[in-house]
Image 1 (spheres, rainbow, N blue to C red):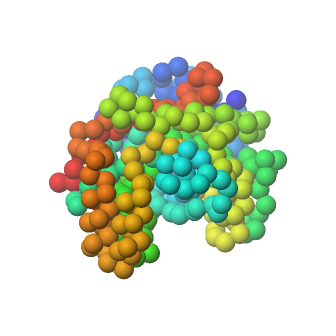
Image 2 (image 1 turned 45 degrees about the horizontal axis):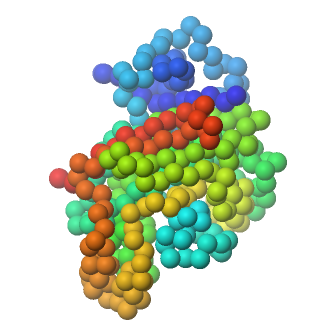
Length: 321
């Protein structure tokens, strides 16, 4: 069995780390500057991470922070569930693995507000399972299910928040700008560190997102098209992936974007005219309600049988001031 870790603050104190057990946090006495340092300690000697004799506080009393610190790279996958391919107007199937990145400045806490940037009209959500690397991934490493947990140390819950109108703001598309705004990656609350026997758990998780109490996304990780080992192998072939880096594995169907014929035509017919393309894109979405200030998102990650809970996010949308 692995261990559930949180990073938190109490009034007048800096960030601390703790073990989550039955609604309480057993406060770790050691200080760790990053999640990498904590993971090093856990994987070096899990037996030292005992909650016996530690001070305990209620989870409700703590200000929970992102359990992943910002000194990392964030890799992302797109269109990695058939249901998301289909709602994007793409024939479901295994084409090419869509890989992109987000800046680490997008990371925010699991209960922080999501800030809709000035000028954004098409703000969208994307619930995702994120994998955390426990060691560097050497160039050209071949990863399979047999050695996957040599590299993947744990996982957490994330939301790949996206400004759809920003994403289509230049001829070759502005995914980095559209997905790279501050607060566009709520993370946590739990960083679950995997035991060496738990590789099957990665395909046995359920992701659920609700908007204002209405379930919008609900899927299980066995539905991933490109499995983690395939994506890590592909990443290792062309870029450096380091200890502590995070891989968002894609979102299921149920996002707000209505990728209909008008969207495609708005992009294709105005491919070299940024202003007109965005205007037409926004017009094509007039019948769709995107995220607005005051909207509340609830995201949850648990095992498919519901017996193990790996954390819930609660975020409210507000406009930039």
